[in-house]
Length: 479
Ligand code: SAH
Ligand code: SF4
Ligand code: F3S
Image (cartoon, rainbow, N blue to C red; front, side, top):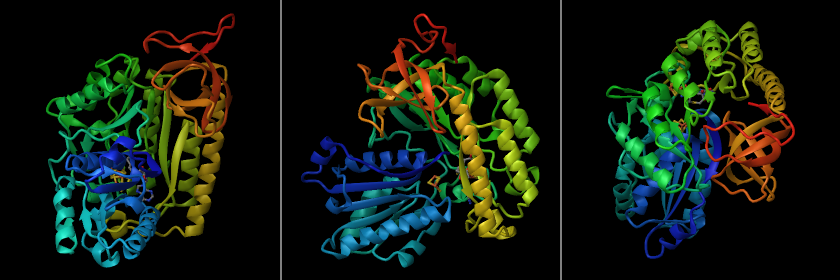
């Protein structure tokens, strides 16, 4: 799962208007894409009850903060933010309800009430249907209301998420919840509970609705999407079925665990023109010894073989990964192995972290967090420096190629440029011309940094399956 920075949900003007007379709700989200989608589910559940969204906590009657526990730093940020919400409440807003949702709520449970006074509602990831009641209870009694029960069934399959802060082009669709892998460093199996897959029909129905609303790309989400299973339907089958709904709907997915990347799945990615040729495949470490202690269930060699298998079937595939520096017992030699794996695979992008011990995990109980912080930091810096160079080289190698870009929104850097993604996941910006969000545009790449491609639009692409446009009078490299 790709971790992302804070997302402040911008509510839509129509939602704000619907707040008139109803209670005003503000939601702030931290953590992964699954949390983003969960906040959309929470918004749907509460708007159904007459709540209206507002943009600023200062204007809200109910402030919800959807939290992440993956690393200590993630929790610190949330605590900091809570202090601010509490100051609002103390300074003239005594009736305001502050609720903590998500992974931190689940991890700390009632402890949160002692540690964070003035929190009124604590709701874990499987308790969101109970939120209207919890908020009522807290308002009426003045006492904190808590529900952190995890479920074996809840998938919120019947809830149509309210697409908060959406660009109207790309959307997240959760297909499963929880994780049963218990990697020794990871808190997710404890905060999200057991793995469960959402019914196929409800996923297809949600994607159909998105298509009707004009969306052009969906990202199927789960902590480990390739262990999706509903009856006889595997992830490969689900991906195939979603891709058949509309030939011009792009389909992405996140995250894949290397242990169950089947040949069938690789074949679907290779063969379906609208399934993006991009795989986020977290490796965590390049050392088999470390991988074993991480309980990742694959070796360095198996990971490298998998990469070969993917590349032989999908030559131009975009690849990204997650890496942890300084896990328990990691030696200098282990670290060198991680660097050499990065050199060897040459990912287009990576999310890189220092190991952060999480209470209750296997590593916290049975392994020693013995790599000194300054060594962790130095190793992380080496990993980042190497990966930045590789990302830059990979992006530069696309100069001269034509990439099919789905236009998402105005570029953050310039009002005159669109931003979108190439099929392989790379970010592309180009001059707006007469193009619009939701269109596929073939772009000739002319410049590159380690994170972005910049180019010149050649024209509209009517159909994803068709060959890309060429530049008139010039043979363009087709990739
Ligand atoms: N389910 C995904 C990962 C979700 S968490 C997968 O298995 O691929 C996202 C990333 O956070 C992980 O891939 C890992 O690199 C990082 N991470 C998880 N726990 C961590 C910890 N305790 N310290 C540092 N990084 C961690
Ligand atoms: Fe955490 Fe491992 Fe599950 Fe990913 S697969 S969420 S790293 S336990
Ligand atoms: Fe996601 Fe963070 Fe929870 S990464 S699953 S919000 S611990």
